Length: 90
Image 1: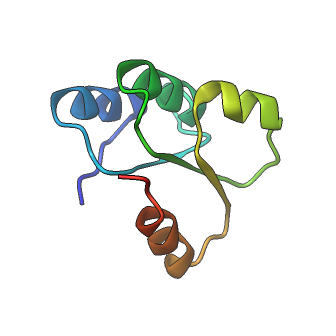
Image 2: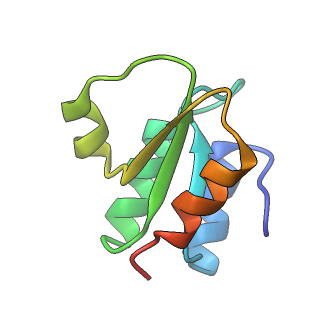
């Protein structure tokens, strides 16, 4: 597992070494949102598997446009995260 201190760092890490799955929080401060992270990663690699963690409801069209493959609502159990990664299409 690799972690990033910010959305920007996460995007850069993915560009250098694509991962099987990316899990990002919808709201990260300071910096860019998880939706921006998802869109940047999907723009770089259309086959990327992106899971969004969120505590609020999002517009399904917005999620689809950002390339989010799965949404987990916080609080999230560890088992749900493992399941989301196992279901990665890669």
